[in-house]
Length: 218
Image (cartoon, rainbow, N blue to C red):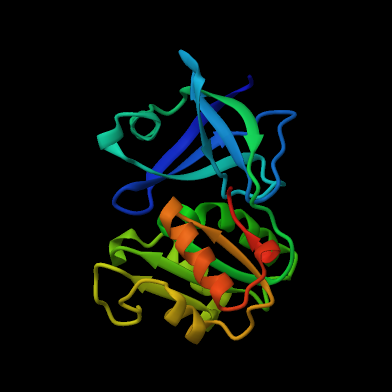
């Protein structure tokens, strides 16, 4: 297992930090896939995190939310001193770019899509895609300015526990999808909490989306 070394960390929201690590030699992931990370003294306890950096970057960038109540890997990472090494065990995941479509994300489910989006921007292919991004409150929204720069009015942000100007105050459900999406024959990239993904996929299929066109982590 190669080691990656922490170069930088900083808050991007109240409970999400950006982590910059050295990139391990010989390990390559498609945009959207995850690296399995582990503590050096507990190499068998591996956790998937999707880098938001592109494959051509010389470093690995992650956006990781801390769940202190779990007292696990995310808390350990958030407390990690600069210069500490982490094990990068493997690459895994079924989320990868296929063709134009709609990104539907809940909370930190945006992270595997960011690497995809950044590559689309670099290659000039972001036009024609759209984003539906659900969070609990405005304070939870990750990199909103960057996402708005990519998608403009094709980015819709919803809040389930907050009411703010410029945001839809509701869950993403079948009624919302019916109004927000005009073509259910395209690809749908879905990521977020397990129930969120299941509910979104069920709603999309009920509206005519084809199961093979749903790209998500199974």
